[in-house]
Image (cartoon, rainbow, N blue to C red):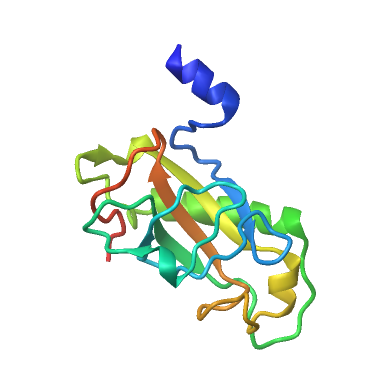
Amino acid sequence: MVFAAGALVGGWRPFSSQPEVYTFGPGGDLAAFTLFDGQCANGRLATGAGYTDSSNAPCGDAHDVEVVGSATPLNSSREVSYPGAAAFAEYGRAFCAMVVASGQVAPSSGGVDKSALRVAAVVPAQAVFDAPNGPAAGSSGGRLVSCVVSRADGEKLTDRFSVI
């Protein structure tokens, strides 16, 4: 019953090979996203959230999210056109599913099994993509695609899932 209610309101999503997708930057789902691969942070992953240096948390302490993989599919130093939200969403889902399936994410950590994780892709919104080295991009650049894990039950993670 709790599972059904949580699923209906979108508060619970089990591990899936089809990760959720959030855009970051001006006009995106997340106001900011400056986290890098292997970094942990506090703050529930949801539309309206933002992740900057102030949300950093040591991965050995209780934290809400961890970046378990990242890639820059389109070079930040080249002028290229924004491929569109749908194309980035498709890339993010495929990339993050591959990262999680590859062994780059530990099978369990801190007493939590990988199957109990929620996986999401964080991709650039057009405004940050178009200004990849601007103030909204963070040190990793505005074309970074990141894979983020959190606990599907909303509880905090207590250790690192990234295999470093």
